[in-house]
Image (tube, rainbow, N blue to C red; front, side, top):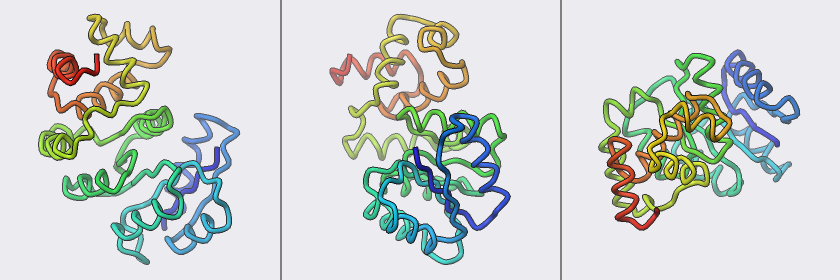
Length: 210
């Protein structure tokens, strides 16, 4: 897998690189210090599998940057990293097709788990944002008709939740950590517009997902 990190802070690029290497030492990691440099990497190499972009780089408007990245590399997973956690920015990022919005204030373990979730096909949002304004974001996603689109991992979690398994039991069945299960469940709740596990199962049944 080829991963492009676009961030104007070298230390943060190195930290992200280290976390990705923990997931798989064979990842090929490219680093760009600004948006224009990131575009050159993509134009010269169309095999980029994931793009991790700082929302606050000085040489571009981030909304236009996300649109251009999706246009230049439509198959790549697009991940945003930012020092802020504004609900409006997160909502707009989701509309533009990002697979995750990671706070730069996240602890290393959280950063690692978020990247793992995204690589497995999930969507990551900061827990603090979900608690503070998640309902509004969920409502927007529900209105766009995307709620029925679940990843394979989310479908697996949903079926195990429907069987009444605990997070610990689900982690054992899936061969992942409990923390990863929690991230999958949060993503599942957002996808179906639910606020808890029981409601997620009920709503999924009504949608015909299970």
